Image (cartoon, rainbow, N blue to C red; front, side, top):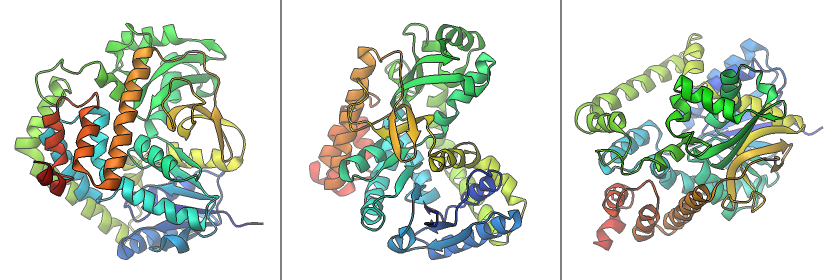
Length: 425
């Protein structure tokens, strides 16, 4: 029998032990080996040793290994979980500052992560495709939409993108309707973080009107209750911001509260916020290095997606039984109205196969047009990253519906394409 092996890219993250804590509470998922990969030998060893101690204390029958060499690590792997975030916490701090200074908002704000993450991910995909071409690549790294589209355009490897928010959507709806999650079928169409719930059924019967009324009555901000009724759809996260552009006083187009947060970040608390993030990172690193058991409770609260999303999805994937999820997948035209090559929608996952789930409602023309405009922008950005072209990246942001002006795009891109910016002046 072939040994079962999972590889975690970005396994040197301080959040990784939360995966093993979640694994200890999920008896339906058993691996022979889990290998952590990270560019930092020191970081992956510290985290790897702590993860090994977790499984030993929990009597989980898995061997924990770690590597810095991708080819050695992925040999024999059935699944590869992508958790990379190029630049780490310093990159995150810099991206937050650049976005606040430039005024880029909504889905387009994910371009800050896309610019460093896409080249690194495609390089990893090339290596994995050579050594383990049959492995299933499960992408949890952001921006999910852009990474999955770039992978699909460059490689034939099976790639499934999962998102914490999308994974919990059914539970949220079930709670609002007062039913069990297994009774609920959520129909969602769009891109990651930019899409619409088109119908919700309970035991096969539509409850969309009841759900909309409940969200409006309870003023459910998470699902943007303000804009549900006019269109009969529930806009998710960045889709909501498409309806609000030009409506607010500040260039970031986030609404008054979001705009004030940006002003504070730019001029008052940026350095203090960065110092707090660095301090939390260093404290967590020291707690993991010294093997403090209480750190697991902190990690579960800090990274709940391992227990409620990633481990359950891997268990369902490994079971081979058909299960319905909202995922980003390579539909290549199977879902009318959604841009190719990939999109995020309700789908049936059965082993390494993904197919469209039956849907009762389609997206209206205005939503389809927005999605196509965003996808055109994504394709230009992927090309700009590949060619290291400031001008092409500027075109990508200029046509994105979340970007207020070319000036906003230029202010943002000068932080990521400095040489190109100088050349184009």
